[in-house]
Length: 393
Ligand SMILES: *Cc1c(COP(=O)(O)O)cnc(C)c1O
Image 1 (cartoon, protein in one colour):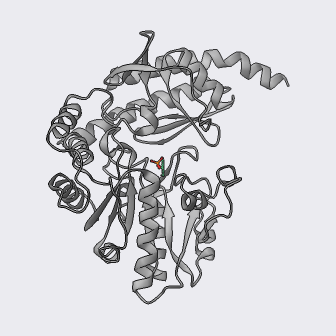
Image 2: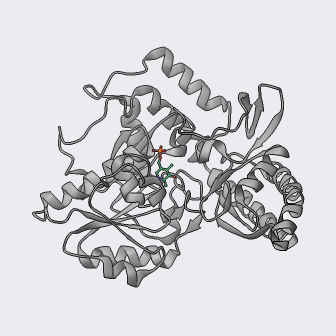
Image 3: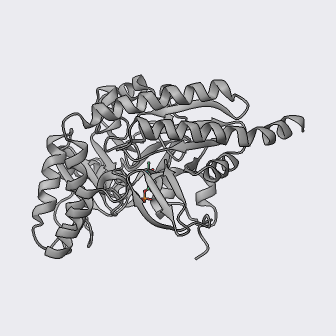
């Protein structure tokens, strides 16, 4: 179907942070399939784990126990606020499960009127019918009405607006600690702390969408850890199985207990193959020193990006983000910057708010950062003439 605007390039294979197209050209991949190929391409541990599991058993359904998924869930529980995990297949599906868990928790608590979830301007929660309503972006809703009921929107990082939106119908809040599609906009850490306190004050649930910023991308396993608070329920997906389709809802016992047998489910979710991929990703990300090393590399890259904005302020006006979820706010159309980067052999992803998004595999080192910065320097020089033309208009 014609729902994608595809770039006319096909990749034949990949190695680490590099992709090679069918013509043999090499690209440095700072898009990672939209923040998903967390271990890069052809990672030996991940590919071996998938191949071995595929040869044993791929799928059995959730009618039976799945030891690989039990192990993965136990590891997430040990490494997070969560007491319980539900596996699914995508970010949107994880968010659907998260919202269902919120509503059911309220219903079971004798407050069935509490069905509404407060979301934020600039959010992105996925493309299902309910999640385009949660996203609230008119562009994604157009033509798909009637919009699913139950989502309210307030400005990002604005506590007064948030508090004013809470009503007796509110079940909870859903926030990305770092907005991805919306333009790499981090929530202020104090705002996240205030949200936690506000949820406790009003007896409502705090939900985090860490589909893009979770699984080590900010330098901690989960982005909310930087604020020193925990949510009641959280969705993850993109990077969790290194490119194999997988999502999950993590929750405290108080929320998880609402999803009794028969209340929610999935055929594919958490099958042995997906769980093997998920375990291989955690083997790497939770290895001692991995996240500290990522944090060092990310700070090095950040300094380079800030230098770049100083050198080419008429092309890149600002560096944004945290860890390896980074963006350059553009003074030229971001699509043009993306094309210029592509011409230089650097893959990036456009994001909202005219931002060029940089979400490389988590396994990059200083050498890949140096190369990316050099390619971005050339990208900026390519964009200078168009900037001059825009200024002359
Ligand atoms: C990508 C994304 C989603 C949707 O994930 P899909 O796997 O495409 O359904 C939801 N929330 C956030 C924050 C995302 O970045």
